[in-house]
Length: 129
Image (tube, rainbow, N blue to C red):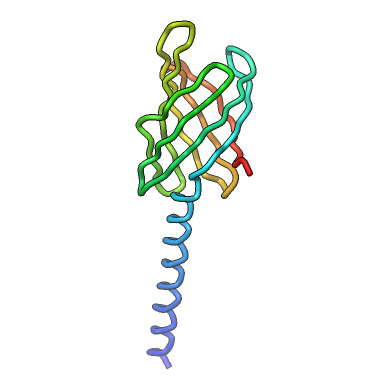
């Protein structure tokens, strides 16, 4: 009887680990696509469209807002976390905005962004369908 319990425990653990691995893989690849967000900032209301592409742990893409647009750099996805940098030309100056996000569902990422090391905003991006 104890051998059967041991085998059942091992099998159950294997199934659980497989499900966790599938969820991580789905989260990584799952953010490929178009996302939108609107939020208040120090320069007023901003409306964004982000286009993400994930290959492995590398994130590439593009951002477009009412203040301009930029290709994304330094992008990475690790399990349920996302990081990238947007570089905007704001009033003739290059402005780097670093984003750190947490994937909370298939349709929502909660972001915190840091504008040129001076702090920034927290907001949610929603998958565009």
